[in-house]
Image 1 (cartoon, rainbow, N blue to C red):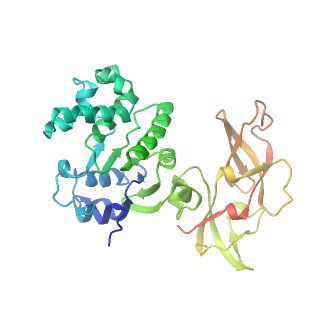
Image 2: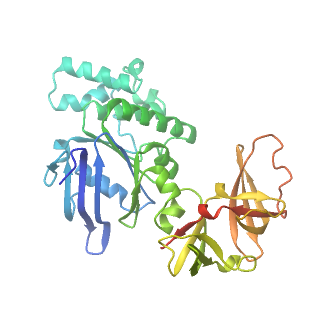
Image 3: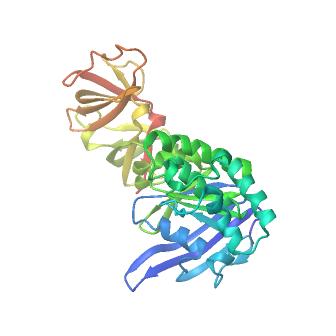
Length: 367
């Protein structure tokens, strides 16, 4: 039974190319009405293939796709309640902005008076009313992307599909467009499904994210849950930066789990961590760089702590990234905020420090 709030239902979908390539492997997802949903993963993980099946440009080998309660099997792309914005913008260079946005309505026989009203409305949404008479070569990259968005929105789809829509933009413009897309999605109230390989893009825009790898969906969760509570090593390592080590469960004592990490063994016999359901046999031990504290003297509290040496300092303006190594060969990354002009000036390669973090900030991963 599909929830009344569900706009897209993907049921046991498999997509094969030939007899050997499985691009999408038994994926089931429910996407809610009015949700900003992201398909996130590295190149070749199957996210674009899944998006193209929603659009109707590919057909599932197995399984079903329902949009707004209707089965999409055999439904042509132009008959689906969706529209798609491509990575390349795909605007017509010989047409004005107004003509580009009006094109889809024109070919479906919409009356001219209605076309003009809807084009003005769509251009207003993307703040391009003043540029309606311009050609695409008179626009910036961000403005051309807005034209593509307006052309998709003018047909009032129930779902807007976005295939890496910001990848061609420079870093500063990408950040600006991320904010604009979120505001646009909230203002029009329709479901957005975006494909991206950029973790920061997905984290900053989406209500929920599906992380994909080799055709499988590994975890579906809101951004903060994905970041703080990844369910496996791949998600932990792919979402943001992570210090990740191999460990072995040595036992459970007084409600705590004891985990041996060979790279820590010259300083710590075992990590003593809160009990965790994944703490069985061989495990991954992970801690985010921003959770790590740095001190010149050994911390006196009950935190996990190791003595390390600075191997490299990388300056990024607002913060510095430190790369560190313990005597047992454990390598860490830690972040330091540059809160004043001379902050951390004394931290250089070769300096000895103590790293520490709270046991409860340690992730125990089963695979």
